[in-house]
Image 1 (spheres, rainbow, N blue to C red):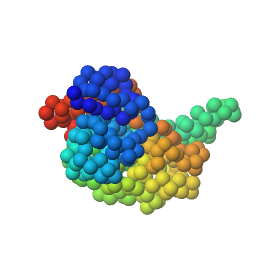
Image 2: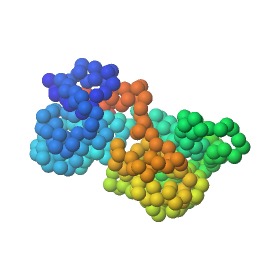
Image 3: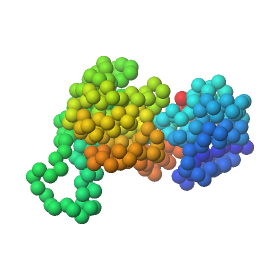
Image 4: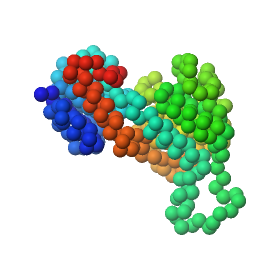
Length: 318
């Protein structure tokens, strides 16, 4: 029987689906696999269902030599923790779970956008502190979102879902920057040729690009300087897409009005400077944190494994 490793505890329905088809080893820890553990897993299992942070990098593949493992069926759409090139050279197929995460991640972008624009986190902390003195006309004035200009960095599945919510739900004018031309955005939207031009023209910037070397620090000091002082930055992509030190400096110096973050450059470490800022909304990577979404992701990963070991093309090969 095919022996498969699940690197983290998963929803019960996903575990059961995997156990019905495979000889499953479940790793009980919620900490990511280190490269050394990943190399051992590549040698010990026929297939692996990894997820965010599991270090199947070049070092892991080099240490594994010719691996027993033939497929990495990633739990999640992002796969920058997997070295796809090294996997291909070792004869290992990589799959992911697109589609299942789109709406949930777009919803978290909207949560961060509204919380940051309307200072909801700050307001909630004020009420909990017991020091709120009651309503008055100039208290905690934030950014009115309706009708504002939205700039999306990366108009893929998730970027388009965010654009739909903002345009049709809040009447926002949508501009976007994409590394390739988008022929059909699916709604009225203007593609802007450069990133500085985009961030300088909008009231809200939402980052929705994949992680990896090509997008690391895509938003740095220059892009933050180009933003308008009243604008806010939302990141639901990968933490290292934003230069965290540059973001802290921009916020501290008032060059932008606020930020909403669901991801961080060195997760789970969040700099004390960010944690101490009232104009920053911080979430613990909740992008897909709904049971039905995580079940759909897991079942999609199991289907990728099943198809591969049945001799069929996996539905979601990277």
